[in-house]
Amino acid sequence: MSVQMRHHVHTAGEGAATMVFIHGFGCDQTMWRFLAPAYEDRFRVLTYDLAGCGQSDLSRYDRTTYATLHGHAADLLEIVDAAAGAGPVVLVGHSVGATIAMLAAIEAPRRFAAQVMVGPSPCFINDGDYVGGFNREDIDGLIDTMDANYLGWSRKVAPMIMGAPNQPLLSEELTERFCRNDPEIARHFARVTFYSDHRADVPRSQVPALILQCSDDLIAPRQVGDWLQRHLPDSTLRTIRNVGHCPHMSAPTESSRAIDGFLAQVLR
Image (cartoon, rainbow, N blue to C red; front, side, top):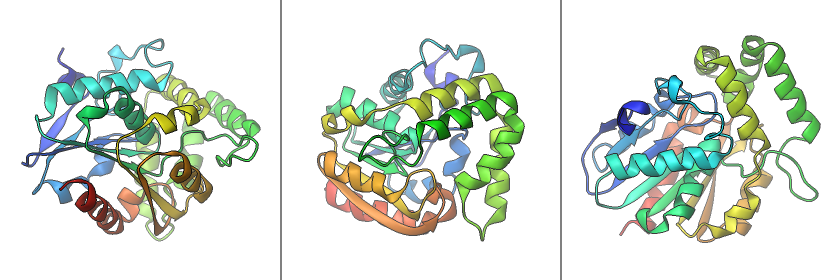
């Protein structure tokens, strides 16, 4: 099976440059439908489902391969080689997808012209002066609750992740998406996502980066964006007024404006 079929790769638009969108935990490529089409008149736009998510081939999900985010980064590099054009490539990753994109950029920096990090967090766990948003006990409790009742956990946590109190349909959609996931794969991916610590990798990333953060984000607080800007080379921080962790869904216009301003500077 080709990598395109394995990850349900979808391409649209035309352009010399390619934009690749990488979704976050519990989601799939449909979460980009409010943002990605805005670039189809200028870019070749590529969306796909991470291993174990959406319409990817669940039978190919291997716990050893995906025991770290590096397994997902290797998939991304394979997809880019197979499906992206020969021109510049821009990575747009959400949450853990932003970390996956960063790891791919570290591995093959010459392949990428820029990276857009939407609600990124290299480490979700507080550590000394570093504020990741959660204590270790919080994450342990989150994982224990998933193990005990995955559907109940999804119905409780998905609305917290989405935020967007004035757009309840988005919370309902994210909850439904979470509930459709394979519970065993979701539990495994959750452990990898929420226990990973890639702070040491951040200074190694040399690809120009936009850190796109929300003004009120329960999952990736503003301190994370400030930390990333201090430690991520050639990075720009932009904060948009939005409640929640998914501005590409709840605030797509503001998100695209920030991305457009960044790309105007790095793609010349």
